[in-house]
Each structure stands twice: as C-alpha cells, then as structure tokens.
Length: 193
Image (cartoon, rainbow, N blue to C red; front, side, top):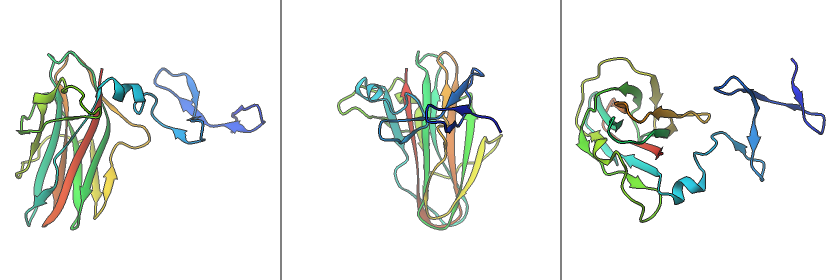
C-alpha cells in the first residue's frame, strides 16, 4: 500500500473528503485527533449557534414502548441545522435506538432547546423540537438501528453529522424502543448557521 510521506519519513493516513480530494487526518496542538472541523469551534458557541435538546429521564413502562426526540427544520427557518451528536442512554433492560429522517414535523410535545452559550438567544427552530413520552407506533424506513444495554451510546460516530438544509422541510426523529421498566433518555446537539 502506498502512502504520502511526512517530513520525518513516516506515512500519513487519510482519505477522500466529500469533494474527492485527498485529506490527511489532523491533530490539535496536544496531538488529539480532530474528527469534525468546526463543530466544536469555540466561535460557534460564543456566537450562540450551538444548541441541545433532551427528553430528560424517560421512565419506561413494562413491555415494549417507543419514545422519541425530534429536531425538525421547517422551510421557513432560514437556517441550516447541522446535527453533530445524538446520544441514547439505557439504565437497564436494553433498548433499540432507531434513527429516522422525516419531511413532516411529527410535532410531539414541545421541548425547549438549550443554547450552549449562557444567556444566548433562542433556537430558530425552537417550536419544531419535540418529544414523545408515550408509546408511538413505528413505521417507515430507519437509517440506523442499534441495540443498547445499560449504557450511554453516541450514535453519530467518527465525526458523522447530518445536515438539515435551509429552505426545506427536513428533520430527524431518534426513537428508543424499550423492552421493560427502565430509565432511558435521548439527547441531540446541533449548530444553526
């Protein structure tokens, strides 16, 4: 296998970026791997563009139940929404996390997004962030299905992110399907630009 050579003679590892251009992996000044350029940028937070929303603790009933957290970008928001973190947590009993793209706002019960900047302004999509704390019927196609047992799991790994573009009706619904009495939760983080 061939590779590019660095100044010290070692091989560089990388891949093709979305534009088809070769790009090496990057590290910060301490040698930590940078996996998502710009998402953790302090300017995004200081500009009040970073938000999160959570279901809080969901006390699931016995049996199989489907709960949800939805982030929807209506065509009227004027913002791009870049979701860069989705976490699902299960206290015990196990659950399945199912991610679904939607083009119609499911409009469950409203959740107020939290700005990562203390005292920052409201989200442009505040009225389109919602949760379902009662059992929902699952239907359609799911992008991701992951089994989680007694842990918290980041569902967007290796710097993955999902863009909900401005001017279109697009959203994500993260469902958790629980299999017994347990405490569960869902958390999503995004930036608006």
